[in-house]
Length: 161
View 1 (cartoon, rainbow, N blue to C red):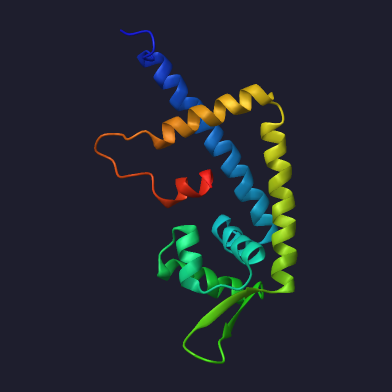
View 2: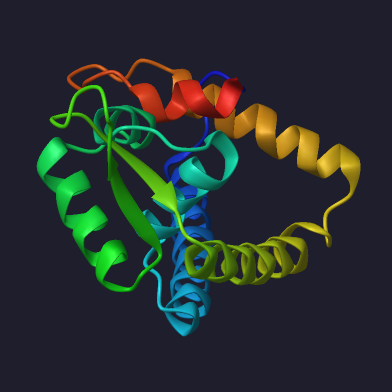
């Protein structure tokens, strides 16, 4: 076996550690977001509005790689919580802009703070060299074409921009 190829045991350990890290971090992130009354997708939608200002639902769907039906459901739930509002344009009532409300901004900022504290706890234990190696290795894995699979998609492109 060539020296640069991992053994079966090494591949299994890599997969196990990836799975553990993924579930520990995302599970804890979901728990912390739940305390703010948001899901991960709702948090991301509010982030689009907080960082980019009012936009239409189509733009939100493209930014989040979410179908129009899913965007509609997210918007409905956030509107019921008074975290965003729909504004019809005066020049064309069919066009709707989504805008974060003061309540939504407050929930988003609290969730962002909790998220940042978690990410610091996870990544601050790694040296700069370790973080760079991890990013480089994960980026290489994420962009590698795996036979029989579809391309990584828009979500990966957002990471690199």
